[in-house]
Image 1 (tube, rainbow, N blue to C red):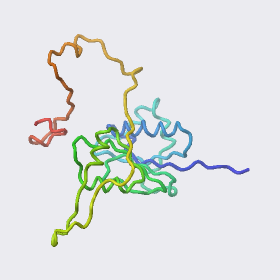
Image 2: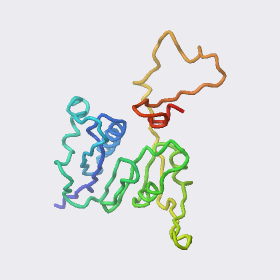
Image 3: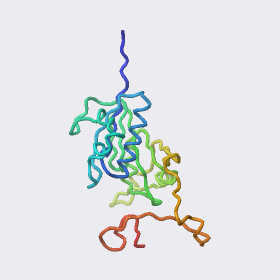
Length: 211
């Protein structure tokens, strides 16, 4: 009897952190596990200074992920058939036979060349919006020799990039009844802005709330 082994799919991500990328990592890993096509292993990573312990704190809903976590350290059991990273593109590294980069992308209209170089190290890139996809496609750079001013390298996206829509389950997240709703806004044009006012001077806060 020949036993067919499932392809190993290792995902490096901040799965156990209290962060936005942690939430996206858990949703992604859960979906891949439910496919039942791969031997899914997760290499937990930190995300800045956000705290760890989400899985244990929410064991009833997410405790099943413990069975898929690789032990501490960065030692892999073998080269995986599929390798994925959930992080910012400049951290992407090809480790598997096929490599996927998952990133939320970017809010502005141009990115750093190091991000394009990171995307080009992967076989496939997946972002969260058409805006992010178009920003990466349209961000192009020329690297010049400082002595001759001749172009020695062009940096532009060369690898496939797709959009994975992320939304809310409307069966769970329903509008709340309150004393205020959007119809009470009198302006003809209004938009919602979400930022993070942090320590530091104007322009140093997350999302540039000050300006």
